[in-house]
Length: 161
Image (cartoon, rainbow, N blue to C red; front, side, top):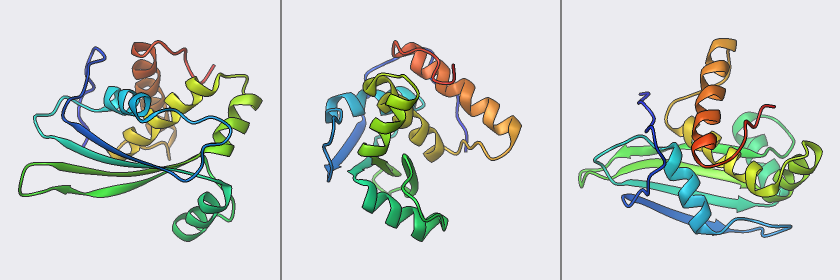
């Protein structure tokens, strides 16, 4: 179910973010930064949101991508939908798996800062968990527009330019 994005960046006190660092090379953002970026992509909701992030290396990313997407190569971000709403009112949004070495390589190739690319992929992954996709051209335009809006509110430039 798609929801409207907030018009301003706000703190998300109701976001519980669990981060697992299995890779820290060459640089990975702190849990505080990841929480800020993920929170900016979340919709206004009265429900507390639970999100897990796993920062991995190329071997783990490749293994997961092969298993779940049948693509035998590492990928920058994978999103896995969560269980949804729990009886206590919490929304288990899902899990993001981000490949630190690949993010660094892409940032360098695309002439972007590591921080900007990490922010982009975090927002991108959260939007996937919220039901947005980019399989068709019209879906891609909508999703890219949302990503650009969220990143602009966070102080980052358009990731597609």
